[in-house]
Length: 352
Image: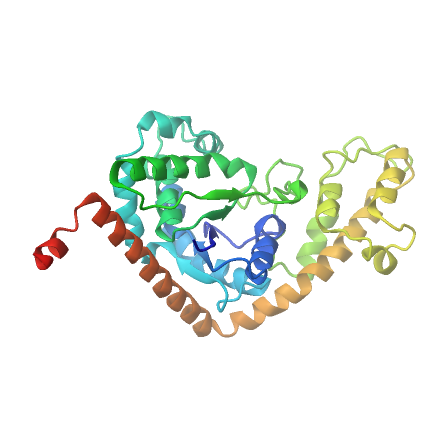
């Protein structure tokens, strides 16, 4: 059996550094590891419409922005297939078939869906498309016969629902679909960075993101304005490291080699934390250190992004070719599904 990965993002805005440390860096590492036969990276614009039906321009305009972020971060179209979800109608067909394998009650029990509904304030007015997006996600995964799906812990219920659908289908119609497994991030700090305002989630809608494409000036302004320990009022006050976004970002980005270059007073992050907790270390110095690290990390990415921005026709061609390749794979799977369900009537008529 081939080792196949499916992963992706909803194009509701440019990608931020939470995406970068949480998934993009890992995708590049997986792509370059040589361990996988096929890697599909989906711009999930159909899923983005489930809660943006009244503002589709937001989705349309960000398809290319996400593609630029992918390429800038090192996704290589020669090694990974970048595709646009809405341009593969077979995914809709598979979703329709799988709907008959899932009950409404089961969808409503999905913890990820419940949390997303609460976060978006849908209450009683839940769009059907949004409620059923775990089924759509199952179609995405199975269409490419993906057996590995990189996710955060909050997405594990979605993978389990996909496995349930696969088992139900294979039980009813014979072994056709591949059951996927999740691939969790090795560094839990990178799982989900908090917002610069201290909120639990970095979110485009909350305006608390540092974007991959931000200018040096924007990065500095956001870092220097970050929420820290509200009780660390004076330099001499002991400070709290746990739950302090600046230190969470440093856990994700700082390496020992950064200290000789940017802050030679210390040799490692543990020394900084110890000093901050005892008192005598101000927030401004720590933020300046974080800013230096982020500037170094994001500069080459931003420069690559600007270069791709100047050659948009080639980016569009990458999306066209990747989507065409992905559709061929999805069409073959869909044909196998029809055959298993014995609804490929015309093919049988021709045979007979």
